[in-house]
Image 1 (cartoon, rainbow, N blue to C red):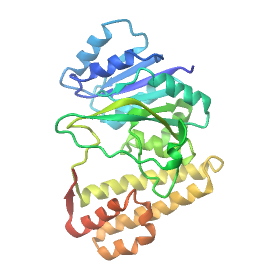
Image 2 (image 1 turned 60 degrees about the vertical axis):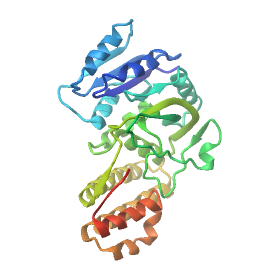
Image 3 (image 1 turned 90 degrees about the vertical axis):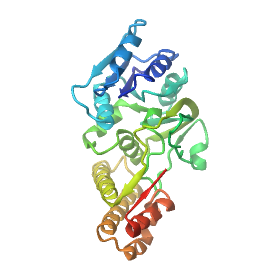
Image 4 (image 1 turned 135 degrees about the horizontal axis):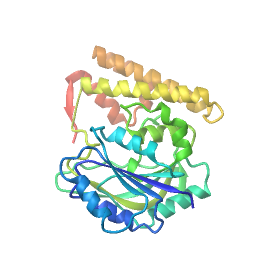
Length: 314
């Protein structure tokens, strides 16, 4: 069994982090290290972690208290830089893991060296006032077998599984880490880079419960033109990083994927022009590139923004 690291990023989690730490402590396959990173919480999160660690000897479990607030993206990423295990599991502060999670995922990756990133299935628990989460609908080929490769299509620019479900090979992470940039969510960045070289896989077993709370970082309630332009700037940069990686690793990235990324860059540029001009006829002219949206609903949301300027999304 390879050495295993768990990176747990936390913020304002005093009331819920104990539940997660208990499920880590209950793992049948215990990790070599658990790196807990508190991002300047003001509610006693760090004290709650220390109290949990004092309950029993936890070799390899460490708490880092950031000197300044880094934000969840950088906090996770720097935790991964700190991790020394062959496999790195990402962990949110408010979830619950099946005791078999680490062992089953590690064994699946040991059996299949093609896997750079493995995401398990998960259940959902909603607290009062939380926003419902839409789960990715796997294609038939992605539901076949215990492990299945993610199918790279024109709608590749998405993150089908949350980072808390991930196990990531450290050698893959080290290979792509210098391409990360602060606007990129750590999990989406890793998924897209792994998918580019056919290394993103699903484990078709439910091994955790993901808790949705009112303040979850991934909730988006409101969108307007400036926010969409900011999002498109991120997409443009991410596609550029993917394109550069693909060109420099032609043996790892298939030609059709390189072509898909270049077409998506054109799509992104046309969307940026659409937001700048707010000309609905440009949206119609984009019809050959509509397939690069994650869904036709997302495609229509661009038109709605152009016509009305903003919308709320529940």
